[in-house]
Image 1: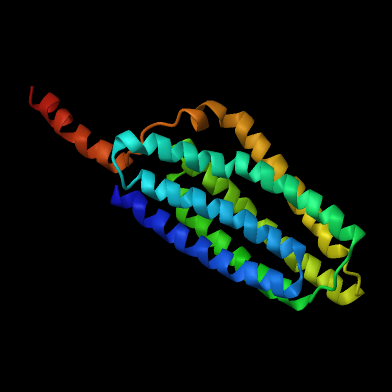
Image 2: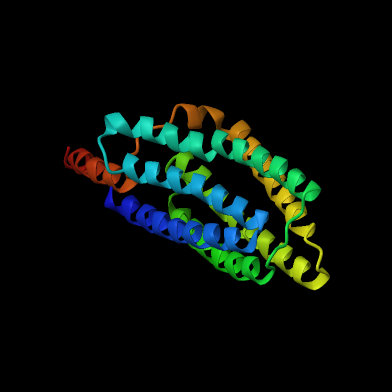
Amino acid sequence: MAHIRKPLALAVALNTAVFALELPAGIRAHSLSLVMDAVHNLSDELALVCLFCAYSTSLLMSRGLQRISNVLNSLGLVVIGGLVVWQSIERIAHPRPVIGWLPVVAGLLAAAGNWGVARALRPWVETNAAIRLAYVHNLGDTYVSLAPVAAGLLVSLSHRVVFDPLVAILVGLWILGSTIVELRRAADDLLWPEQAVCPHDNLGRARPGRRLEAQS
């Protein structure tokens, strides 16, 4: 189980750093696109913590924890996507000044952090649907985190704050679309996950049987 716990722990740490960076920077810059990306990463954070716990507790609890992770990584993201679009439309109607350089710096660092999370999870995507869903979302987050960068550059160059909520709308639509596609593709696996078992442990348990067969 330690084979999976280590990359999951790394993913949790990186995602925590991304959230801790983006939220205060987004509030300081009045950047809706950066704040919404931070909230999006908070949903991923809670899901990753549940996945880590699923591989750290008894098999009896692992399926329940994986279901919670799947809900946070799917239905929770649908809610967040809808909230992003709604808040962005409201911000277009009532614009606020945006400090353009902060979303650029924070977004670039967040993209690097999300890429690190996806890279840590990649070797285990075939283990179960929950890890695959977390990997897909964090890989997509690498590009989504570049949206505040684009918003910050457009605001800085054009001095038009409307670009920030417009980019935030695109982020919200991407969250909605990618989550719905993954739900349709693997709904049964997400609702009824397998027990969180390390494949290395399975191999270890299978080897004695193979040796007995060879002896017989």
